[in-house]
Length: 101
Image 1 (cartoon, helix red, strand yellow):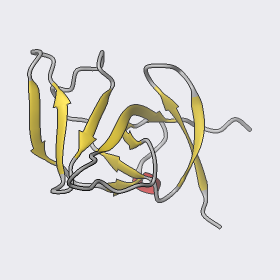
Image 2 (cartoon, one colour; image 1 turned 90 degrees about the vertical axis):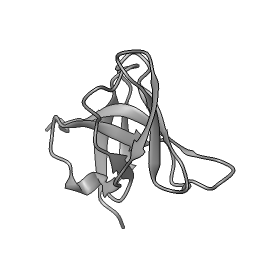
Image 3 (cartoon, one colour; image 1 turned 30 degrees about the vertical axis):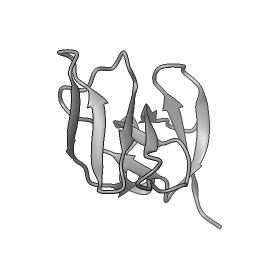
Image 4 (cartoon, helix red, strand yellow; image 1 turned 180 degrees about the vertical axis):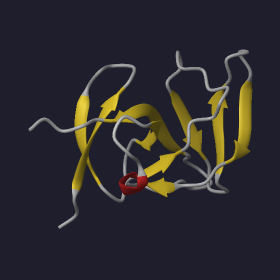
Protein backbone atom coordinates (compact mmCIF):
# COMPACT_ATOMS: atom_id res chain seq x y z
CA UNK A 1 0.00 0.00 0.00
CA UNK A 2 1.27 3.44 -0.92
CA UNK A 3 1.76 6.10 1.72
CA UNK A 4 -0.76 8.94 1.48
CA UNK A 5 0.34 12.58 1.73
CA UNK A 6 -2.00 15.49 2.41
CA UNK A 7 -1.89 18.49 0.08
CA UNK A 8 -3.87 21.71 0.11
CA UNK A 9 -5.08 23.29 -3.14
CA UNK A 10 -3.95 26.91 -2.73
CA UNK A 11 -6.76 28.36 -4.83
CA UNK A 12 -9.63 26.61 -3.02
CA UNK A 13 -8.15 25.67 0.36
CA UNK A 14 -9.37 22.10 -0.10
CA UNK A 15 -7.18 19.47 1.59
CA UNK A 16 -6.87 16.05 -0.04
CA UNK A 17 -4.79 12.93 0.48
CA UNK A 18 -2.72 11.83 -2.51
CA UNK A 19 -0.53 8.74 -3.11
CA UNK A 20 3.18 9.34 -2.47
CA UNK A 21 3.97 8.66 -6.15
CA UNK A 22 1.68 11.46 -7.42
CA UNK A 23 3.48 13.49 -10.08
CA UNK A 24 4.56 17.06 -9.23
CA UNK A 25 6.32 19.93 -10.97
CA UNK A 26 8.49 22.66 -9.48
CA UNK A 27 6.78 26.03 -9.32
CA UNK A 28 8.22 28.38 -11.99
CA UNK A 29 9.48 31.72 -10.62
CA UNK A 30 7.17 33.76 -12.83
CA UNK A 31 4.07 31.53 -12.36
CA UNK A 32 0.80 33.48 -12.10
CA UNK A 33 -0.81 32.33 -8.84
CA UNK A 34 -4.18 33.74 -9.93
CA UNK A 35 -4.51 31.08 -12.65
CA UNK A 36 -3.34 28.36 -10.20
CA UNK A 37 -2.91 25.67 -12.85
CA UNK A 38 -0.62 24.41 -15.56
CA UNK A 39 -0.59 21.62 -18.10
CA UNK A 40 2.08 19.14 -19.12
CA UNK A 41 2.22 17.71 -22.63
CA UNK A 42 3.49 14.33 -23.78
CA UNK A 43 6.94 15.86 -24.47
CA UNK A 44 7.40 17.02 -20.84
CA UNK A 45 6.74 20.66 -21.60
CA UNK A 46 4.76 22.69 -19.09
CA UNK A 47 2.39 25.41 -20.26
CA UNK A 48 1.42 28.06 -17.72
CA UNK A 49 0.45 31.70 -17.40
CA UNK A 50 3.21 34.11 -16.33
CA UNK A 51 2.76 37.11 -14.02
CA UNK A 52 3.24 39.27 -17.13
CA UNK A 53 0.10 37.69 -18.65
CA UNK A 54 1.93 35.59 -21.24
CA UNK A 55 1.32 31.92 -21.92
CA UNK A 56 4.71 30.22 -21.53
CA UNK A 57 5.97 26.78 -22.56
CA UNK A 58 9.09 25.37 -20.91
CA UNK A 59 10.81 22.05 -20.23
CA UNK A 60 9.58 20.44 -17.02
CA UNK A 61 10.86 17.66 -14.79
CA UNK A 62 8.48 15.44 -12.86
CA UNK A 63 9.17 14.55 -9.23
CA UNK A 64 7.09 12.30 -6.97
CA UNK A 65 5.10 13.91 -4.18
CA UNK A 66 7.15 11.95 -1.63
CA UNK A 67 10.20 14.06 -2.51
CA UNK A 68 8.49 17.25 -1.32
CA UNK A 69 8.70 18.65 2.22
CA UNK A 70 5.97 20.03 4.48
CA UNK A 71 4.93 23.53 3.45
CA UNK A 72 6.57 23.34 0.03
CA UNK A 73 4.53 24.80 -2.82
CA UNK A 74 4.47 22.95 -6.13
CA UNK A 75 2.19 21.96 -8.98
CA UNK A 76 0.44 18.64 -8.26
CA UNK A 77 -1.12 16.42 -10.94
CA UNK A 78 -4.93 16.34 -10.90
CA UNK A 79 -5.00 12.61 -11.59
CA UNK A 80 -2.79 9.61 -12.28
CA UNK A 81 -3.30 9.68 -16.06
CA UNK A 82 -0.08 10.58 -17.89
CA UNK A 83 -0.08 13.20 -20.64
CA UNK A 84 -0.69 12.09 -24.22
CA UNK A 85 -0.35 13.91 -27.53
CA UNK A 86 -4.12 14.44 -27.58
CA UNK A 87 -4.66 15.21 -23.89
CA UNK A 88 -2.19 17.12 -21.67
CA UNK A 89 -2.06 16.38 -17.94
CA UNK A 90 -3.37 19.08 -15.59
CA UNK A 91 -1.55 20.33 -12.49
CA UNK A 92 -2.81 22.55 -9.66
CA UNK A 93 -0.95 24.99 -7.42
CA UNK A 94 -0.73 23.19 -4.06
CA UNK A 95 1.28 23.00 -0.87
CA UNK A 96 2.29 19.98 1.15
CA UNK A 97 -0.04 20.04 4.14
CA UNK A 98 1.26 18.88 7.51
CA UNK A 99 -1.13 16.29 8.92
CA UNK A 100 -2.64 17.08 12.30
CA UNK A 101 -1.73 14.87 15.22
